Length: 588
Image 1 (cartoon, helix red, strand yellow):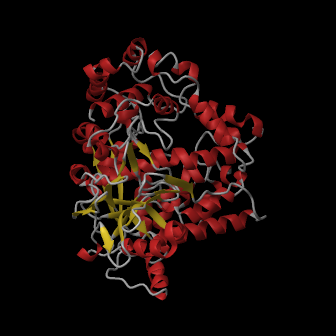
Image 2 (spheres, rainbow, N blue to C red):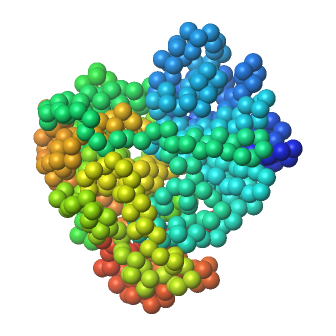
Image 3 (cartoon, rainbow, N blue to C red):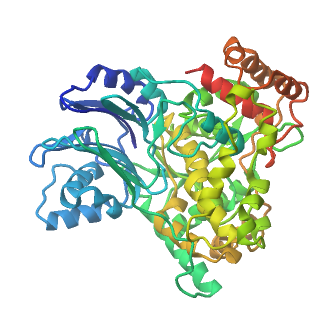
């Protein structure tokens, strides 16, 4: 886990090493244990290091192999690096470190850009070929590790965070109207390659981009889960397959030269991780839960369930209680940690949780992703009996924050996209071959888009704000493949995630499996009042907000007059959605 940055220039133009130096301080929280810079003439790489595997200086980056004439910068973890290392030694390669970074270098030399298909893990990396000037950029299958891009005539820059690119300078920071439409429709999600800023893009998940010295490039998607039923199997066989693959995924994510903990919310997903680690004989496991003051009639914690799991499996449990004194300062700090605006109130919970967890461990496993791959959300069951030709309309009705005609009354006319670009995006996704049922089509879209740019990005941004590595076993791509192929009715059973609940039975306490679906409760954001409401009002009335004029004044006034009643289709606070975007833009 680290922060990476770089500039690639075309032709005879030299890269601006000072621009990369300006980017590195923005990445320091991602990599507090060291930094490095490689000047290759027309290519420059920068790196901030978080020491997780091979804590010696032999694992430092940017890493260059002079004999192979390659240099790499890498963010993430290759969980099968030891097995790949042995295979590469068998092919005649020698190693000077025990790092997974060096395995990437040798694997690239051996297999070229196809090396990504051999990696089990999360990664974003850039490899430069000294002799040809070719640079290969790659991102992991589920987009767990980020890579932002800024292109201009004669050059391309990349970084782990959007603010790092802005620090380098020369970026168009105007609002992308299509991205704004997506933000207001998909719960703040902006599908790759767009971001809310016109001058910044992101490399999509499961994508390799090869850039030649003359600036020409090719891009390909190297993986996609198949939502088809290749073989007939019984419910019990699917349950066993899910349990076995999750068991393997959890075990893989214990690979580290430092201790690994678990974020234990008290829900099924994180509790299942703890249960499997205990089953594997892990001793002295450290777990962490967070809770907030109640508000708006809502409880602010789920300690009843996390305590139950911690007690049953004998973990070293840390219960973190957050009062109002810590909550308000964390709001602005959380916004500052976002590479893109994210409306979920879970972001603040993860930010505060990560701050405390980092005092104890540098690596944690987390349960994010299970709802998106095992159909745990409320919008999937209504699609179960919808004919395939009506799937788009049904999905939009259940999932969109607001229909296009409402958005037309909320955005000022100059900011409204020419047509319903978000609906068209869904239509194009659902029209692709495969995913024969409406539920399959929705799960495919959500796992490729919403999952990547909401819960996955949330975990990465908030944990790395404190140099904490978050690992997500439910996004092991082999587990995702099994989940995708599993019949929808098995996933929808028992109020959602039925096959996962069956897999957990006998390992996780029944009270946790059979409880109503919970969430990361943050009443202070779900119900706006007091100082937080003042912060929201100030953001929407700030001079920058008035000058930008994204939203119709009458819409903003109505929300401020009744801050907690207007909700999106899925119940998010509309006022918070607007204010969060403005707060993020104002701190650029």
